[in-house]
Image 1 (cartoon, one colour):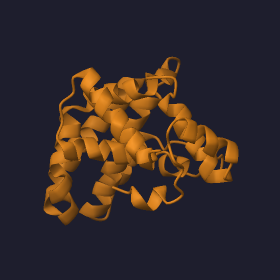
Image 2: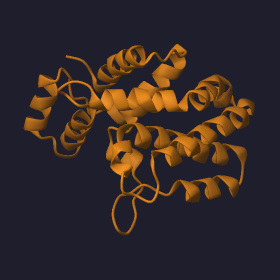
Image 3: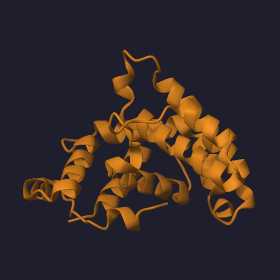
Image 4: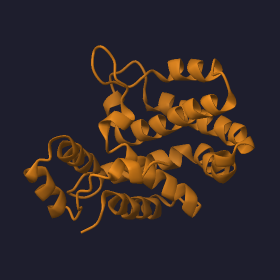
Length: 197
């Protein structure tokens, strides 16, 4: 049995190889942690009066522009980049008849990571991650393809695994846990705390 994080580590490595995407190990690890984190619905979606949903990227960028300090701005830019990467890679096929298409998320996410790579350099965390953000900005389209490859691969489609994990986390369903184990993933309730990046 493997953890969800190990599942995504193997999935990211295989998809990167298949797509011919070369990246620093730290960048690949960041993407693995991003996927693991977004296995929890509340990590991706914002709560609103009408229920959970994605906050529009333009509003997030406005929030970044009005942030009181660099750390707050960087946190919002990171949210834009992370959300854009996940949505474009895993949910991009659902944009066919929407007002915005996947290219919107690719452009916004790449630009957010690019700005973040420069802005974050002056912070402790930024010094460690500015290279990761720069690589994600430069190879954003390629990483979208990596996530799309993961979503489309095998009989245990990644979205199904994410959904099963979410059901198990929320309900403790023995059926969901058993299905995860059949996919080779051992459910782990400490997922959220251990995978924050």
